[in-house]
Length: 302
Length: 272
Image 1 (cartoon, rainbow over the protein chains, first blue to last red):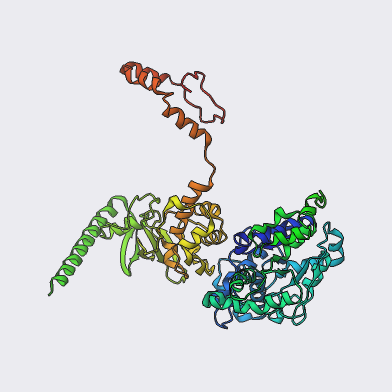
Image 2: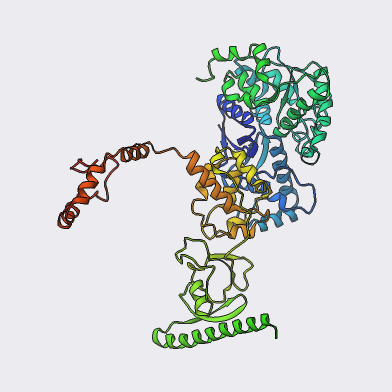
């Protein structure tokens, strides 16, 4: 089955370790992530200024590209792109005046009024495949991997775009359980990583990250599981800072959820690009014997 | 009257005289070839020019002497970027003055040059990593996908898609999409984010040509063979040949047929 897919710029450069294992995993699960033939930046962040319509042009144009292809659903992987696209879509659906202004500005494109549904890959796994069916496809259960789901903001806030319960999300926990891992709940799993504050106050990033990382460690996590390249960037860099600042601070491997999916499906570490990860994940995986086993596993359907 | 004013006045008179002269010539021309005169507006001033002229010819007909904003006159050099509007139409149109023929009631202005930031780099140090391009032109991330650049391109390039490709680190795609760019700068003149798209594309094409496109191995072999003197003997023979001999060789040479395939070889392979 083919799914219209929007990658986002970062997934083509710094976060190939988020995209490539996702594409391989979905193929193993019988889905083709079919990248839009034309797409541009999602807008990077949803503009909150009420009259700032020019920054809605980029996300809406991508939704138009999906509509042009005759698609009624668009799958995203990057949590930030998901948030920007889904919120712009709601604007086009619900606000007739702004919709008309945007359609009139983009007079070279077909008109758009929110026809395409924006979903995140985690929703596809939960709603279209199901945790039970996913668990059956697992070739290499991630046994004893104590991984803490870290949601950050953009999959859950604001409420109207949330993929799960805003206060008590479980989607990543269920996902990790399906892969055979041991999810570690911790109260800071939806606390903001500092987001784009890294641009205006880069020195504060460590302080944003400190309570998140300390809490995860305290609750027994060996690794964090992420969905967002910006969370990865901020937490990854903050860990390096905290190792200097806080004696005894232990650096934790940061995984993208798609890397754990690919490993569990037996696709091997090659598609995961661990060399792009923060916190040397390979030593932890080796310790858990998740790298050596994976090599002897037959790819699904192969 | 100051010297500056006098100079301005005399320049204006010169233009007027030229215009008058051209108009007189035009009357004569009209009798001869009966070209219909149509009104156009150059920088807001009305002129009647024969239909069928390009914008550039029409400006010259109207008395302008172009020393900038004109180059190859063949649609290739990118020197004569032009914008125009038609009455009652809000849309800005673009053209190359040497290519587009005049239409009645066009309001025309040339944009022969537009200031644009061009990065300085040591090409030898570039490896084709996307981050190198990001560092040289960080303003590319100011693009809001408004697509004004694409609408302003007289070459029909998907300019915004090519910028998107660069942001996605896809230098090869940016080079492919921008292949027809003649660097006229009209995209840059319209950019909301103040990008200099055409300089970015030139960098992309340079990197693509030098670092990404596969090297032609057979070319390297041939250059080596030439340098080693494999063909010197044949050249020497030609140099020594008398004129008649040369003519005969030329006339009797075996030419490659137009429809020849990749594996075509001449019957006489002595010189290969």
